Length: 294
Image 1 (spheres, rainbow, N blue to C red):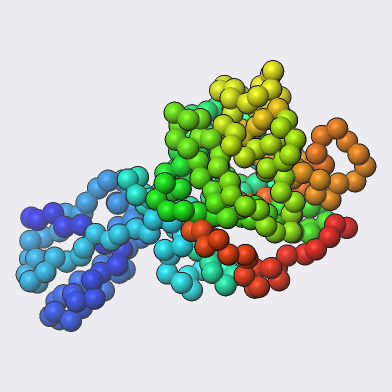
Image 2: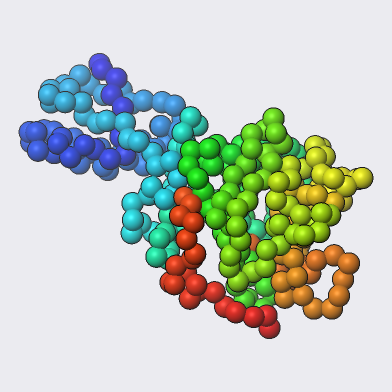
């Protein structure tokens, strides 16, 4: 018996080598879901030595995309496996619509979520939730992704009337854990205000460390994460809070009557990463944005 690992995508030369190789190439494709499960479990499949009669290995281990921008153009939006440089494979949601496609979704939340978001530092570090619904990818994984390329970020916010706005920052990265996963943002553009880099030092988020209920790294005399219910890049305390159960906040977006806190009228949020081009959003992407608040 020889130990042979099945692969997700068989090398094209297998199918033309011999009739037997062609058969095994088809088999490889049909067994790809099984292969994915074995790959994630760190296992391999034992096959009879007769399968090695081809002059090349049955299958070569695939190179996972490093982020969603490397997923094949034209693929549907959905859950994919990526492997950032130096990290094990992880599951992410890839948003493939729009002119460019290939956006890696790192957070998704809705007002009536089942997630509490009041989680520990360790839980935020490794991520939680359901990638098909609401989730946090994980601060460590986000850091590792942003180490491998220069990225931009897009925050998308829907209000209670289902109007959608977005805020783009042409640079996005997180420092490592020893630096508190400090947030680094570039220049702002988009239809939602620049609420992440407020002029008010009590509400700024850019260049702030990440805080959770059990690791207070904000500038407030208390603990913003404990007080407001979710991990975030707080100062003292916030202009934006998207990691929370209940009403989500993005600055003055769709604000009604005056309140000492930002307007909590947003009901749904995503934020997504894409390799930075330092270019404004595409025309097709802008057409999906509904202006104004009802």
